[in-house]
Length: 295
Ligand code: ATP
Ligand code: MG
Image (cartoon, rainbow, N blue to C red; front, side, top):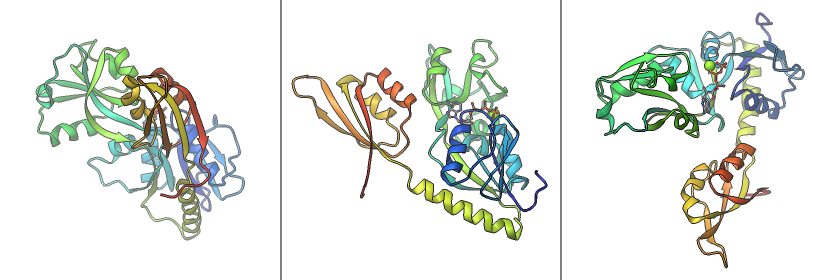
């Protein structure tokens, strides 16, 4: 299928945090994907394109080599790949999902005094290039230990004093007695294209698909979210609400210290988000569609 020269090839993660949303985006762009996600590739029934299901780490290589014209991958994986080399890749759009941050974390009991605490230390990470660049930019002399997984265990195993790892809620770090101290990179899934030459026929397909994807991104459904919360939970809740800058906070009549929070979420609101909000102290959470909006 890879040799099919008249079809576009799109690389997405086979199974993992980005798989479902990547498929969904392509489906919203009108692509009818033929098979389940356990196979290595799938044909699109109603568009001249094939999907390649691969490890996320391989997506930048596939796209940079021009084997796939398009790919969906975390900015973290992409930047780790492109750092220090002239890769034939271009980021076309930020996709608004797969949000996380690459952070340096220290043991909870460690008396962290800012970046200078990292001087001379060992930092374990699966992102050595990004970590080294960050240290270099900040004039810190530390050594980076590359691991391929289970980075959070490094301090306990005395492999390193610090870790540099992906964080979304911070729960995994906390469960391992670590807390984030510095942010190296804010990340989300991005759409990338190859900058290798694409044959004439495929350019037309590529342009058509990109237009559709841009359309999907532009009309991404916003939601209106309403919930109640005690005062001490407001800061955390505001932080969790996806794509919200300034929520409306209204005191609840007859319930001192309790507030209603109303906000427009410009990103999808998932059950996981609601569970996290509930865990942070929210109750009576309502998510309603917005019919029209003028900014
Ligand atoms: P693969 O088998 O494809 O190599 P993986 O285990 O490397 O999968 P996942 O854990 O599925 O990758 O994460 C894929 C991407 O999801 C990450 O590179 C990152 O961009 C994003 N992501 C979002 N939140 C998190 C998080 N809390 N931890 C790790 N990655 C996250
Ligand atoms: Mg991976």
